[in-house]
Length: 285
Image 1: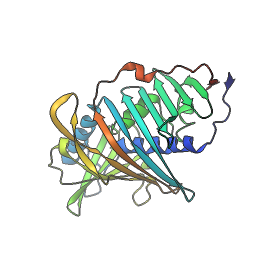
Image 2: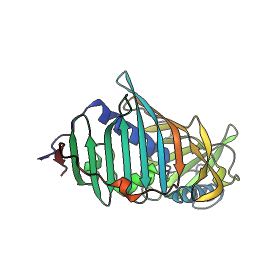
Image 3: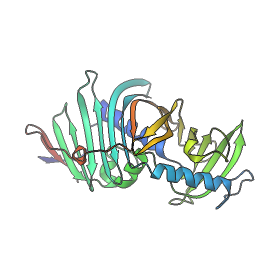
Image 4: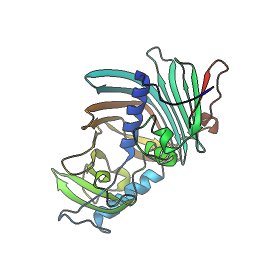
């Protein structure tokens, strides 16, 4: 048993960090100005933003399998993954090697963080603090924020505005949690207008940060109508693929989902790990 001082920078860990970032980003949304440049606390834009927030909040669990490819520093890599999410604070994420065997697994629940690195034969455990999560994600997130974002939640809007762009709608959201931070403003491009039913609203792209200088850009090339396991007959749009770009870091990531289940029943045992007898235990601070 030993205490962790510096997290290993193996390629699969880098894969994991980028994949989680993109899934996180795919669920985010915040910040807004109306067509006249004014932030609105009420009106059609705020009504749609609030309904999109409530739609995402109603999604309590998620199960997904798919593939990820990313490019950074001129190198491109590929891996397959599986994810399970249960609000408010439970997560399991597994990355697979080319032979289809688990290479890395992260589990978070009830304020604890655990994981297995199969190649290095290591089991790590410790508090799910923002500092420990930052060993995998270069973001300052609490566990419940991480789970909320992975499961498709959007930031609760304080104000919103909209304008028509090429027959679609740009919806800008000011997040209630960070209303004064320009880097947290989200600009969403929606198909259709403000009067569409929120359950059928499709997000085509999103950008976080100042106008024309986003720190994260997202595109959703493919969106599918998916059933809700908890509501027979109810169909909702959900991204079947996500393309993410971090302009400052010059990183690109694409996620393609083969299987997605919205609000499926999940066994709590998914969110617990047991250290194999022959694995080294690494304690997170």
